[in-house]
Length: 102
Image (cartoon, rainbow, N blue to C red; front, side):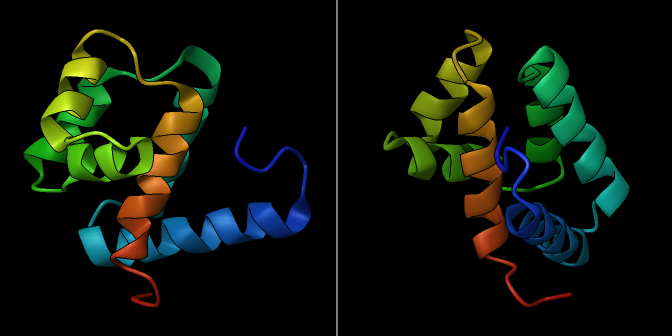
């Protein structure tokens, strides 16, 4: 998990989800649900596709976090090669673009 019981990190994660919700129109509950799903069952191409279809640059953010291109990140996602940590790192990269929006 991205915060492993650290209360400060958990609070930061909630703040980042709040920024994402304010900046993207995806409700904070949806971000939290996706995070819980990723932690419990792994990264779903279905969820990534939903974000991408909403115009969110999730594959670009994943690519930046993983040191690959957006196309490579999307290809890796289709093959099931995006780890839970990759997802959290990518979502935090995406959140960087909305920092302070909320």
